[in-house]
Length: 192
Image 1 (cartoon, one colour):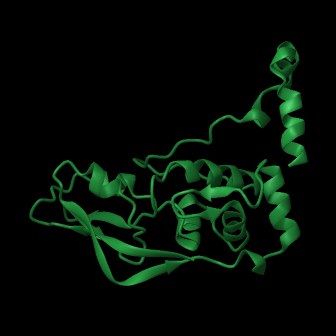
Image 2 (cartoon, rainbow, N blue to C red; image 1 turned 180 degrees about the horizontal axis):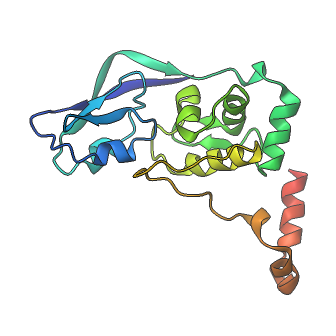
């Protein structure tokens, strides 16, 4: 369970409606309406993106009256399917999905098995993406792809595809550079 103790607040006097905050929000909690940013508190995970990126310093994080609690019980999904998805994504269920919020890969996989179809939905189900919003995005993308979810980046969002891993190196490259021990590295990860 992740407790979100803060929420974004917009100073409408300073806000110019540029939509930078909307474009960097990892949970689509901010929308610009009538040239002013508006925050949906139930979606805000209090990451620093909006406040850090606003060119007018119109957004700040303030304490919530009551913490927003996000999380799910990964044990409530089919464990064989969860492990299968993690293996297909070349991730261990116990490794970190989000270091900032201490959410594990098993939580992200469970969110997908419970219906999440985007990084935003995974974040709102697990509490991930409350800090840097970068590290966990890669892992979420790998899990979604492993589950066969095809997602289109939202216009203007800071979305990027997952980075290449050891598992993505083409076989011809592995054979061309045997001194780099790529297959041996894979064997080590398979044992884990």
